[in-house]
Structure formats: structure tokens, C-alpha cells
Image (cartoon, rainbow, N blue to C red; front, side, top):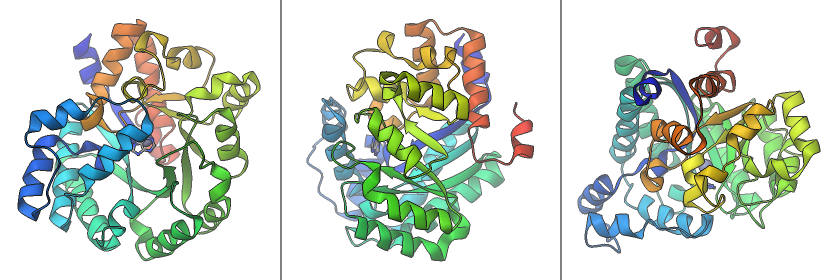
Length: 324
Ligand code: ADE
Ligand code: ZN
């Protein structure tokens, strides 16, 4: 079965590049860049990965990202992830990056973008992995700061397919960014948003009705409202679900209680993703394997989930056909 998952052609649509920072690379870059970490050993870092909520994770995630300073650091981070993709038969990726996490610390937008893009170009050339880049706004920051980031991105529009919305969800609903997303759409960006991870189903409705998203990231709380589930099915609005993340961040009590297969059975276009694999104990194949182990997912269901990942991607209809 693990061979089956290993060899299944997959796309990954919900992956924060900063969330692929393994403790080994964190220490290496901290040493190179003279950044002081609040941990003495790699084991101490791993021991700290015991989260009680999304916020308890985000605090560590932003602290970890502080070791990323030079363009080569962003390149190395992204290249390591792409090699993992190669190992796991991930043929296409749509990667999030959080420019504000870095520009807030005085790192230039261009430094971040160039490092990531150079790795993605090398990944295409040497590993055959196709990719798109999605720029996320940090929703705990202001609308004004999001507008500034959107403005800054325009010079690099040819490298960015869309915008997203992440960070602390509750208290920062999609409506806060309605005008930013309107401008992003006018600029030709695709739009996605984290919604219904910790926030209730109203966050998903707002992302759909106010931001006009092409996909919902997470969206697992849609099952609180049958009308919403029907709407997602009818419109085939994809959900990028992250099973290991949901359990690690206590959005779901345990894996046997995860609703991903129930949503699949109801006809929702759900996909499997790893979110922040360095922090949540597994990359994409480990997420598929968890569904097999704890939810008894069949080969047919796993195949449908993998096909959904291409169907829900921003590849052209022609490119998708290759994988469906
Ligand atoms: N940033 C990185 N991972 C995230 C998640 N799971 N939810 C919200 N923001 C994030
Ligand atoms: Zn996420």
C-alpha cells in the first residue's frame, strides 16, 4: 500500500514554503547568519513542536523563519522541498510564501522571491516538477499593509499566479481584505484563502461571497452547514485539506474523526496537502498514508484524491488532461 501511495502521481496545492524549514537547516542558517535561536539542540526544537492551537504553532513558525536572510537561504529551503517532491512522486506544486514575514524584518521582497523562483526554475529543469507561486497576506496585519504588499508584488507578477490569506484566522475574517482581494483579481491574480480551519463556516461563506476565491484552503468546518456543503459540491469549489496539520493543531480531535473522506463521499472536490510538513510530522505521502491507516481509505479513494489535486490546480485544462 505504501508503495501504491509512493507511486501515485500527485500535486500539492497547500504548502507554505516557510513551513518546510527542517530543524537541521534552521540551525545551519542560524549559525551562518548569526541568528540566535531559543533552542540549544535539534532535539529541543523538535520537542517544542507540541501545539495546542494554530496560534501556538504560528509563534514558533515565525520565530523559525527569522533564520532566512539571504536569497540563497530561500533558494536552499525551496530546493530541499522540491527534492522531497521528487522522492514522493509529486509532479506539480503550488507553493505559498509569506512576504510580510520577511519584509517586516527588513528582508527585501525581491530577495525572498528571487531565491524561491530560482529553485522552482531549477526544479522544472532538473526534476521535471512544474510549479506556481502564491503570495499570502498575513491576516493578523492590517488591510493597509496587505495593499502595500500587493503593490510591491506587481513588479514580479510574471512569477506569481495568485494571492492567498493565512495566519491567525479567528478575529480576522475574509471581509477585512475584501478590497485588497478585489484589486488582486483586477490585476489578474487567482485568489485563494485559508477559511474554516479554526474559524467557523461563516469564514468560508465570506471567502466565497466576498473574496470570490477559486479554492478554499482547509475548509473543514464547512460540514457545520449543509447548505454550504451543497454549494461547494454544486460549484465544485475545491478544498485543500491538510489532515496531519488539522490533528497537530487540534482543529480535529484525532485522525479517525477527520471528515475528509466523508466530504469526498458527498461529492466535495477535496484534496490532500501537507501545509507545514517540517512542523507537522509528515510530507504529502505521510498525509495520504494517515488516511489509509486511520480512515481505511481505499486505493480508489486515494486515487480520486490524487486526481482531484490536479483537477483543483491552476494548470490549464490541457495540462490537467495529462494527469486525469
Ligand atoms: N501559515 C502557515 N501555516 C498556516 C496554517 N495552517 N493556517 C494559517 N496560517 C498558516
Ligand atoms: Zn496553510
